[in-house]
Length: 553
Image (cartoon, rainbow, N blue to C red; front, side, top):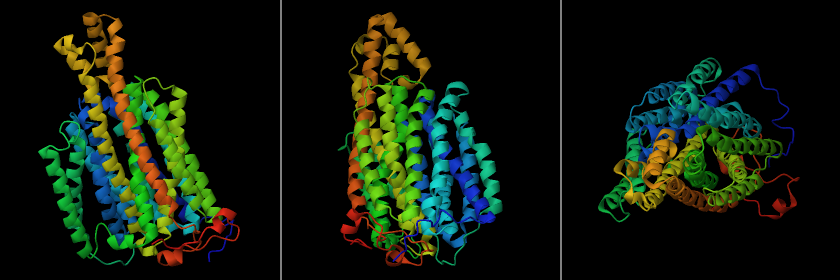
């Protein structure tokens, strides 16, 4: 049984080297989190200038696909060769690709460079949280994981505001250049103070598995992007892509079962806690990234707001995220309990996305902000505690692998979810733009403008559309034509949030099945049976009455 020491993790003073190493990890998190939210607010303007609304989701999907594949690769490399060198490599790749993306001249170039940036991002995500496992005991992680989550949250809160301000003043390209000072600081801190964390684990890197994973996922993403948008779901192209993805997925599964060091460690998922936390991360990953990338599109495209305004809506989400993450981490550190926080957070997340599904072009701004805060408040504890619980269920030598496996599930959920949501949004928008009132009598230039989704997020194009519609149909028709286009976009976005609510409800069912146990205050020695003990005597009566399960079959 794990003793319930309320002062564990809170009263211990960290050695100087550990504090400096911890500072390096915080700098890396600032680098990654600022990039994600800053770019999120700029993307609507990017697609307008580069004329690539149909590739909007791919600016995100390319990043998440490569980061998803590289997550388990770097997790394995970190376990074998040390997490420090992998973290340094990730910083370099991430930064150089970001700088190059700022010089993109076409949407395809941007998508390709975002894919390259994702490789570095995979290293950052896998190694950052794994290093925390090297520095702290499972109980301590509950407290100290709240600090990096706080850094993540603060940079995420100010990131949308900075991104919107930069986009409205200097231009969207500068949002890719802002990572440079963070990169220099994080590289130096990691190089000097973070321990290598090397282990003696043997085994080859599963290069074939990584390639098969890309080959299996890419056709699925293409099918989700094309289906219901430019191609019917029953079209030969979509069916062929889905069939190819299924066939390659079967080949991948067979290969991973035989591989000595698989990129997707199937044996790891025999542990029920790892299996459940990974499934929860998979389901919630779609909602997390959909909110970050589609809320700015809602504000700028459906409401006609500026990039700065979209930052003001996204920042409350991240504020709620960091606040509840810190509170849940503090609570888990003091009590060792996590189940109640996870279940309550899943309920709040479901409620938040259900509210987002009601968004329209007439939704009051305060309600949009309230919905944003609700979503973030629910997602925060889920994203952090899932990792802590999974880490406590495995031996210390598998920290990097289990951390990257959980991140892998989250990224895969986000990758597939955003691609699918993008197809839904594109289909609804295309249908709405095709039926715009009075559009058939407009001149070719005016028709091209009012039926292009890129117009809604480009102030210059929108002004030209206003001018042409006023001249050809009269000033009274402008609100009708442009308003119908905005309604079509809002409808597509509402559907995507409704799907996110459904996934969050499923995640609630998964979370409910986690054991109502406690986190240990000693380094994990191996497996669920050793890692998680029964609730302490001071547990809530409702939890004491429930059967204590160390493993779920």
